[in-house]
Length: 115
Image (tube, rainbow, N blue to C red; front, side, top):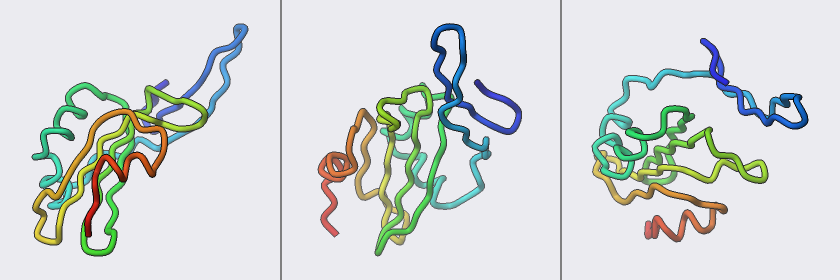
């Protein structure tokens, strides 16, 4: 369910709706990091077909991580459909991935981080 201020992830069971998670609807900020990440084909694909998501922008050691999480899919308390882009300090794309991931370790293998 979507309201003006929130995304609600819910499950219907026997005529009852149970809210599982609530996320603030935060507009994408104006950011050089985000603009550079949006040039990545994996992230562009994600944004073209994932209308309900949350995002994170984080600096990790010598690189930035931009992560989008699709809120339409939830499995065992986890949101497995993601798009992740890593950028260096000059905002060059280092690597990226869009797809189904059920553990952080598997995501890191897909991204093949060598930093």
